[in-house]
Image 1 (cartoon, rainbow, N blue to C red):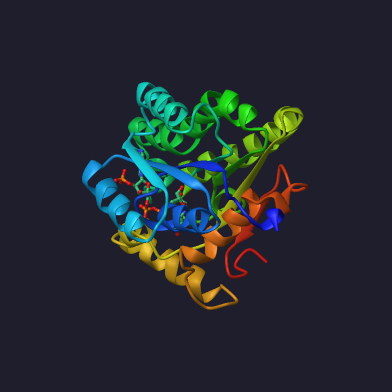
Image 2 (tube, helix red, strand yellow):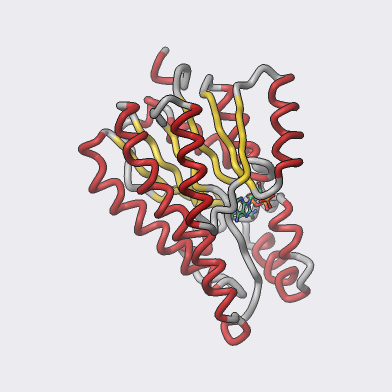
Length: 255
Ligand code: NDP
């Protein structure tokens, strides 16, 4: 059934070397897509590509710090040549969090977090537009966060970056529907990754995470695979009437 397949489709996943992005790459590849990833570490990319090759997945990768405008342009040139000018799926996943109170955020924190989490995705959409349009069926997925939907401790700028992403998702869906490009955002709750592990090095964040866990109906942190499944669904032809949505996967935390 073509509605449940990504065979013949191409995808770009930013931050595909670890965590949620890594799970998304595997999920898309299992559905038959050819995937390109980026991260800031060539060695880690190489390790991933080898592993995926042995699993029979069609994945390529290159270094790109999504915070850099030049590197984003370079990435899209590589993607265009790898996939012959056609891209079906863009997953804006690479992201950064710095658990701090509002008073403690530096000017650099604000620009780095907004740049990595929001501006990068905005610009990558602009760069990918001709490729998405040329593919005939385009799907953009942002990895947002429940922090962009509800106020959580220590997340002010991170939350603003995700909130901006959620609204941009709706504007994208409106403007690019005519090009057969859909746009959706997935808002995870707590997910077991290095990002969460690093956040929990701060005692205050650790306490906030424990409180969140105790308010989560399913009483546990999520696994990357429990996010990637939703992302893959949104990219399938089966999801062709779903656009402009922010969909939560959080074990019920926000209910
Ligand atoms: P991880 O830190 O586990 O993985 C992040 C991935 O992105 C890595 O591949 C990393 O590689 C890459 N990356 C980070 N910064 C950049 C950059 N500037 N340019 C290019 N690649 C980059 O994080 P998660 O998997 O947890 O996070 C993925 C997304 O999910 C983020 O947008 C995050 O905000 C969101 N999210 C996570 C939640 C969680 O609880 N884990 C909850 C809600 C949302 P490298 O460092 O080598 O560049």
